[in-house]
Amino acid sequence: MGNIQDYIEWRGDLTFDRSPWNDIDALLLGLLSYVNLKGAAPAPGEAAMTLAQVSEKFFSLHSEEELAGDTSFVKDIPLVMKQAAAAERYKDLKVCCFYENINEEYALQFSATTFILPDQAIYVSFRGTDDYIVGWKEDFMLACGVIGAQQCAAIYLDDIAAGFPESGIYVGGHSKGGNLAMYAASYCRDDVFGRIRTVYDFDGPGFRPDMIRDPKLSRAAARAHRIIPEGSRIGTLLEHNTDPLFVKSTNKGLMEHDALSWQMTGRYYQTAEKLADDAESFREVLKDWIDSIPDEKRPAYIRDLFDVIEASGCKTLSEFHGLNLDMIKAMYKRLEVLDQDSREFTQKLVKAMAKKIAGDLNPFKLSAYTGDWPDEIPESASAAASGQEN
Image (cartoon, rainbow, N blue to C red; front, side, top):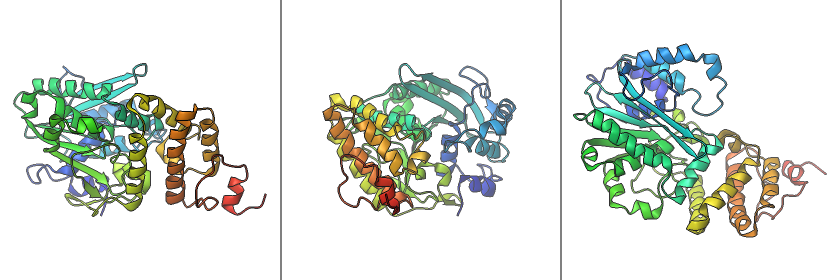
């Protein structure tokens, strides 16, 4: 077994004529949209470049030392691009129409890249969220309805399809990018939808129940390949209408969202039978919490939730995966300043998340609290948990 970097090493010498397009190729191109190709890849209206040319240009603009400063789980994807750009299978793929729209005032984060395959089909790749907490917050906001990035995705797909009127279309992305792919394929023009071959949703969050019942989402689901790790947390958020393929990961818990940890052999993923028990429990906790909040209060309560999470001092999911009692104490202090209704809803989820993350995933066990958690974490909690005397 290996990961996608091993796949490139093992099979990168095989052209698409010798080994046809597959779901691992789709994951690779979905991940490449995480690379900030501004200044390296052609913008809409500019001539396409090969992946080899784009990679060379990118690394002339960014040193590997500079890239090493990125601490998110997508930090190695530029190096994956460099590896793919040197492989016979991928080096001559054309890259075009890189577009990015980041608007903090409107909480909009959108980016997409288009790849032209050897048979002249196109792959429209939507960027997802990295493991910064702010990106996780954006995933939760999908529970409030349509977001700007989804609308941008549908417009981008329509515009790109118009520029390639004879091409078959693949649409895909990882994390939020998978959600954008599903949304864009659902709400693009009918003539564009008719040309879509496959929609790839790699561990993307879902949709509100009222949206999932829309026949347009159902038509996209019929062409979707949904792939999630067996310990998925992000890809089980909200509702889906496509059964997933569960894949094995070398990571655990939240960090299974990192697709570079997904395991594969040859052209195929290493699969699991079902969602892991701890992931299923986590999914139920989140679903119960979201479903219990009235629609009109969801945006405010989600903002409150993430204010509490950020009070831990964590900036990334990687750091949150290392949750300890000192961080939990800081979160509880932030809870105290919320209004009563929000505090009750938020505290319910914080308790459940803290127990699931710190209790189930860490070697640091919450042995001090095996039953119901108190409303406040006492100063002696850290000592009690570690067996030290006060």
